[in-house]
Image (cartoon, rainbow, N blue to C red; front, top):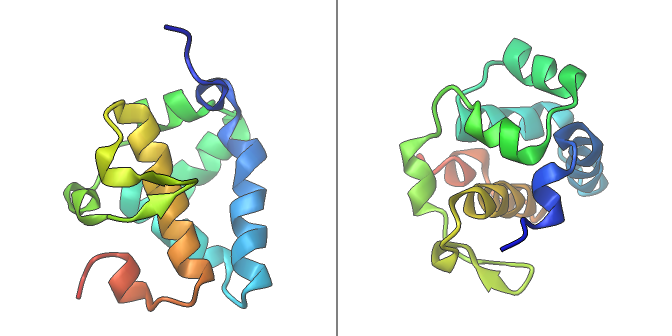
Length: 117
């Protein structure tokens, strides 16, 4: 089976779209970064290094320092698909990130987005 093209898409090319979506709704780049770091275990320097290296999505998630175990609590629909029903691991990670950015843009409180409450 052929891989979905998002796997070979540069994370750095999509990252500004995540930030723009959040900023259009009055949220900040720092909040987007916080979500990405929470999900992947990257610190800010690690995230910036990944962006500078223009790694693809597959590499971004496979090289993540520590995927957050609480990410399994992320539920809901992204692009018409329930994230908890996605079987392919890399696609599920990508959709988790999409869902978190959606929640940020919809005004959800940060502690709820990061599954702390």
